[in-house]
Image (cartoon, rainbow, N blue to C red; front, side, top):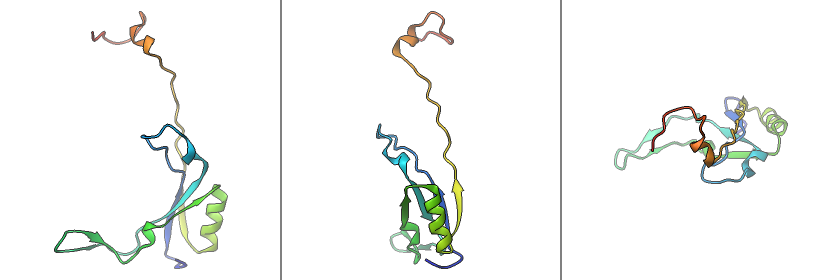
Length: 106
């Protein structure tokens, strides 16, 4: 993996929609991109490759650690910044509010 043509992305993974916890927000991931062409198996139709680096995902506790690892191993990388999520407080009672905007559907 010390090939100078190795490319990767560094990103902060999003929270899984099936879970309510925020455990994944505490680390950064370095994920390698596909370098070799994909091969199609004519019998089964499976797609494969000789490059297994795409299966490797490294986790780091900070962005600086991920950048330092990539620089030390001659990996060209691109950092994808996490989008900020704004949460608007809602309540069930607001569905029946007199000042509600929009059509009443009941």
